Image (cartoon, rainbow, N blue to C red; front, side, top):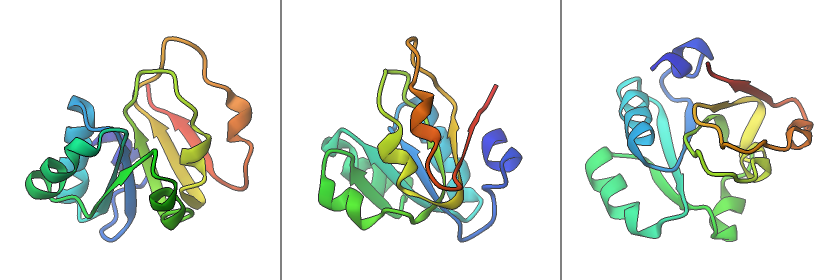
Length: 129
């Protein structure tokens, strides 16, 4: 709830991406839906699609390895909540944001992310403490 409110990603109708659907991802989806956001779950696990749509009521489920699905949502999100603790590239996520969109990483990998990837357009990335 705090990242959504603190970074003004809490207005009904806003588009929010939630990356992966572990414990934190589930909670992010529930809060976002309760606030009236359009929620897109982005996951590497296609097997989670039915559960995500049927039980959590997300608006769409995107398989991160499906380039056609990723291309279809480029530049559409007001914000993305990153819940992945494994080392991964954030560059594909940045491209999904609208101008002035926010990438909020609530989990960080043990190894360093390449921050050079953040220098693209007017997008904002914020680490939540």
